[in-house]
Length: 254
Image (cartoon, rainbow, N blue to C red; front, side, top):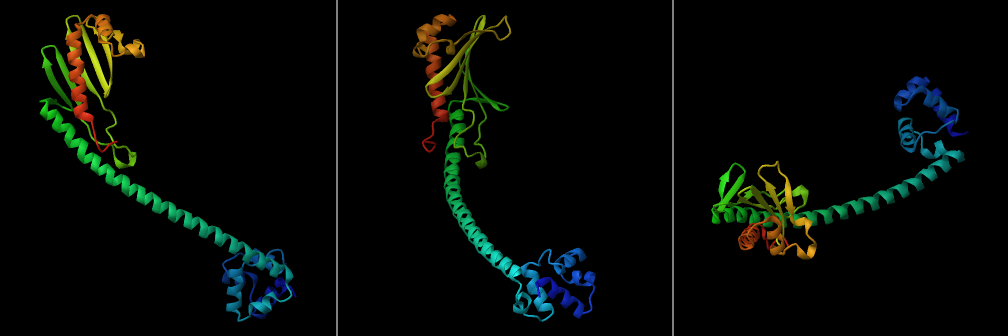
């Protein structure tokens, strides 16, 4: 007698309809019909439930049903394989989690150290140079026609995984009669310079980027190009480098 016949026999012996039998196992009547016609089989969990419910040992249920026995053997093997795979995956996830936790804890500690260094240092430097605050901008007038401008700064959030200010800029503006010379410091040894005529709308007459790399810091060439005194230009640039370095240098960021 195969498994389907045995299920049918148990159901009829207990005077139950397929609908009533199906309710016991939370399946449809069609599923019971499929079991009884050997078109499909209950899973192992259902077989155990059936065995407990009607006090019939699994040995009797499975006896002589080679198809079901093979299926259970296959499910057991698959279960062992899946269990092993899940164990390996869990181990990998745990190890990855531990590594991430260690790295994040290390980064978090470094982040706090850097934040506690560069933010107070930045604003203290502005204060030392006597920058005047105007909204989110800070302005320092060094000569009658020269001023430096810096913005408000704060560290990005930890989720950005950055250990410095996002935009590290310092601007210098030289009022030169018919034009304005703008110098942008965005590195410790590099700047960009442009000259804008006052009677024209932001027309760039000259930019440092127009020079070849080897001449980028050649102030003689630059001063001639923009028609501005070389010594005065050098003084502004050196002052800009000094302020920039004092604002943005960071021992812990390296």
